[in-house]
Figure 1 (cartoon, rainbow, N blue to C red):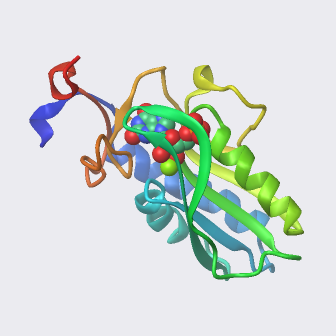
Figure 2 (figure 1 turned 90 degrees about the vertical axis):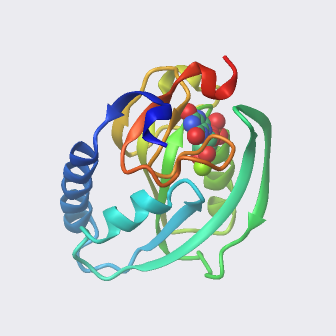
Length: 178
Ligand code: XMP
Ligand code: MG
């Protein structure tokens, strides 16, 4: 699997250090509260796991699965595949994402949670690809900015593969027939 990676953009060590840094920040911000951490499946799963271990306050976890991507392109439409099991009304929400590209997924989720009367909404994303943005969404906390390249690993997939890499990398073009 590793020999299909052209370049490691963000190493495992850098990711873990960033989780600790963001975790410390969120520990302070949510001190004495009981936020609902919402992981956007499947991509946010490794980041959510590592990040939440670094937050030293009580919190609740839930998951949403939405799809807007088809292979390597955004289909432009967001569909709920799995909804929350938790009421968000009056709650402090911490949305955890793997990457913001167009921003469509998150602007859809933020609108949905506002409609459901969340008390506050904070967006944490491991990666931000600002060049891809077509909506006005902005994350409150960004781990790393990435260039306009398709990245895989640490939750991010190409045709469901590479999510289990411990780092973020770029695929060799021959892997996707480029
Ligand atoms: P939008 O465009 O809605 O996209 O901000 C968010 C979702 O799109 C997926 N995405 C990627 N997945 N490599 C991936 O493996 C990428 O470079 C990439 N860019 C966007 C991802 O699932 C994210 O949650
Ligand atoms: Mg995703």
